[in-house]
Length: 395
Ligand code: SF4
Image (cartoon, rainbow, N blue to C red; front, side):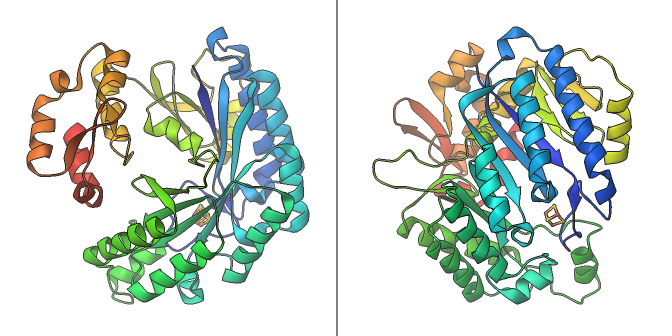
């Protein structure tokens, strides 16, 4: 059994206009105590760890926020703490989310030296006006330079995040962003449709009429265009929002960490506001970094899987686990949910558990059965566009 570790770093230079993530600006003074707390959280969980979890960590993901604001020595300290208290597999995938404006050649080389082997860059757009609209703290030039730094440093697993469906974005501008991203030959692309989240600056602009509300059909057009361009450029569309570059004779550079989520497998969620799925529980840590630091500081022990920072926990019933497995598995465009895999895990067949849901979705043309190594239930091409309508059946 393999397990993953997600580490949340809730600090950013400034908040982007569309962002409602658990992140804070102007709190850099908390970074050092936060790293102390993270290391202590790892130690406490490590001491309480059942033996079957030892040395089974196969992916680590530093997400945020902006984890590239961490100094290399802080990152190194967290990784060595993980190694000594949880144990990392020899070929573990270690990913770091990075804001292109925070990187330098020296930092990139140091990342590679301490074992970061996958970098996910918030590229977002190749259009400077769109970057400004989004409130990103970087320019296109920063992003292009970051890719170059990563390559020179020998990081050969690079992802770019791009965002589409922006107010006042044109299909032509989206096409240009995709083409610039494709010209960089990165191993992985994650494309996200913009959601105008309540309470964000973008939301206020849209509500007050300063900006037009992004049209729903426009996002679908952007998605269609991306599917076509990326397929032509040799990328495998393996998850609704994710593509991996196919190179002959090489392993497909899918994101192993995210596959852990989509296959509904266990993961630690460490840091403020991090979510985990461990020991049969869905867990969520307290969100604010100051409260997180205080909780961990005052703790001396914990009982697995409950970190002292856990604020919410929910024991997952077998019924919920089956629903989650289908809901998440359907995100995998080719794999979907394997009938035999499902039976092996739950001792029941997919059709026995969800006969009505599957019948309804098949009738609507959203899912289909395909025969590969086993019979698999997956979204149709049409279903990929309307994924939420399918997922709602399993909520
Ligand atoms: S860099 Fe990411 S986490 Fe930070 S404010 Fe921008 S979108 Fe939010």
